[in-house]
Length: 61
Image (cartoon, rainbow, N blue to C red; front, side):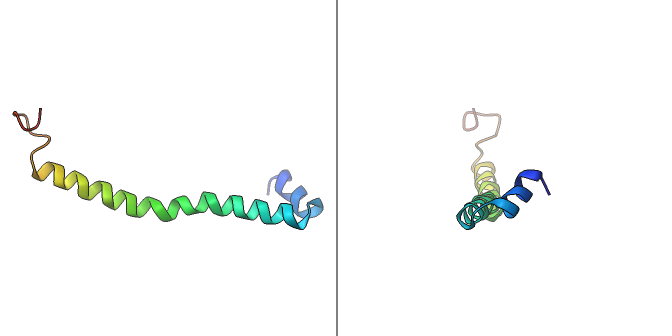
């Protein structure tokens, strides 16, 4: 454990510990959103390929 975190739990106030835990939770929520966003981007890519957006013709250029 980093010294900053150890110092927080040894000498920090209750409110400081709560604030730290909430800030760590904010970083973890990113993982919750990554999977749905990746699925969405994949499906949008499939749709673009199906309509010919990447073809080497007048539709894709």
